[in-house]
Image 1: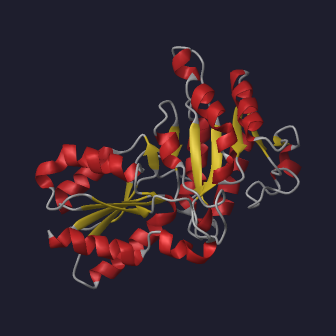
Image 2: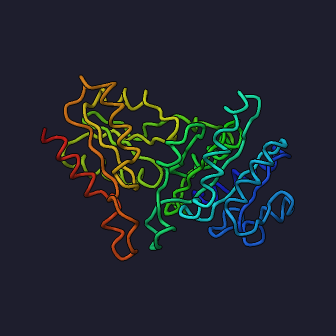
Length: 321
C-alpha cells in the first residue's frame, strides 16, 4: 500500500468507527483532495461527513474548533504547508489553548492534516516545513509518519487523542509503498522507533528524511561504520528517552530535517541530548537541514534539501573529532 492510500484507509476506518467524526477541507469531497487522499469517502459517507469547505483556511480550522466543542471529531485538511498560515491564529490562539483555558473540562479532538516538505518540483508555499512553529506552540501535539504502516495507525491514534494534533504528511513520500498490518497496531504515534540498529553513531530523522537516513546508514556500512537510525514520529512531545539511550550506546548524534537548521527542531534535540548525555558524547551533536532562506525554485531544490552525501559528510565530521 502507498503511504497516501494508507492514510485514506485510516480515515475510512475513523469514519466507520466514529459516527461523530467528520472531514473538512477544500476540494476533499467530489475531487478527493489535491492528492486524492479522501477519494471515495464522500460517496461512501455523504457530504455531511466529508465536507467541501469554501477556500478559507481560517474558516476550516475555526469551524473545526466549533464542531469539537459540540462533540464532533473533526479532521481538517490544509491543501499545502504554506497555506496553513491564514489559519495560524486559529490554531495557536484557540485550538491549542482551549483545554488549558477550561482547566481540562473541554476536550479538543481536532486533527489538522498538512502535506509538507519539498522534493516534488514545486514552488514556495507548496514545499515548506513549518513544523517548528507548531512544535513551539504549547498545547499542540505534532506527529509525522515516514511509511505506510505508520501512516495508517498514526492518523487513527491522532483522531482518538483528546488534544489537538497537527498531522504532517510527507508529500514526496505519498507514493512510497510498504506493508500495512491493518489488524494489529504495533506502534505508539507519540514514541520514536529505532528503524535500524547500530553501534557507532545515531541519526535522528522524521517524515520525508527517514528513507534518506536509512540510505546514508547503508552507505556508511561500506566504510565500516555501524549507524543507528531513529524515526522520531512525534515532534511534540519528543521521545528523548529513546534518543538518549541510543546516544549512550553510540556516542555520536546527527539530527536531520528539511526545515532550515536555524531555529529548527534539530537545535532543541541537540541541546536536550547534550544536557542528558554529555558524558557519553564523543563529538558535538551535528545538524543537517535546509538553509536559512525561503524555499528555492525547483531547479535547485536538490541543493537545498538534505541528501545522502550531506549526511555522510556530517558523519565524517563527527568521526573526525
